[in-house]
Image 1 (cartoon, one colour):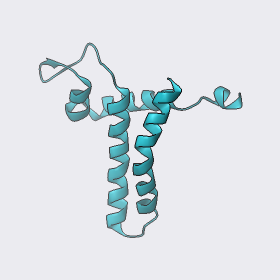
Image 2: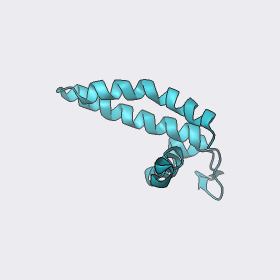
Image 3: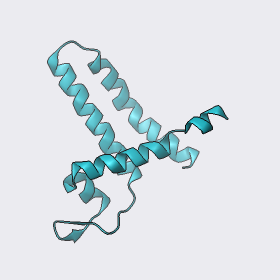
Image 4: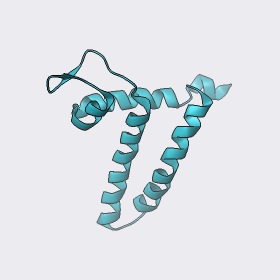
Length: 98
């Protein structure tokens, strides 16, 4: 992944992340619910940003597109794709040592 793409994603996630931190520190149930919603919004942002195409999957009888996977695909598939995207975005232990 290029540095430019990593910067772009970081900028887009930063605002949601800051809001999440404030809400997650709150004591009210409504703050906790909002914080949980923000984590899902961040996940969707990663998926929209990182999922370019998908092959061999049909959703409701049509070839799957990234948007269709996000909107109507199985949650377990979205979580699997999200984990792969996040793994690509983060430095490995070996990369951090260098």
